[in-house]
Length: 150
Image (cartoon, rainbow, N blue to C red):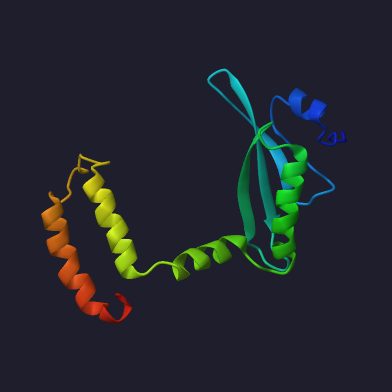
């Protein structure tokens, strides 16, 4: 059985396919992605939660933008929570949900629609104008959620 080399800058640069894990830091590895004549090396993280079948996956970014030291520090922070059984994705989603109200979400949506970023509607969309969207959402949504609207 051949042993995979430890990730050093030389070994990472020489890697053309597959992935290379970092034994000192559980969960972190560098994966090679090829396409359009380019070779991109991406730092990734994957680790199972203790005593569970689910796992946590995350992507840091490309090498050499993020060095091996950056990747190890990033993975160590994630490992601290994973070893305690804390899912970083759930924590991030809970923090985001705690800071936004229904009226804030609606205001963001309307601002996005007014910005005109997406001018064409998908085929089969019933709502054609901003006035139609406002007419449909405001009465039904705010009538039932008055306690949550500021």
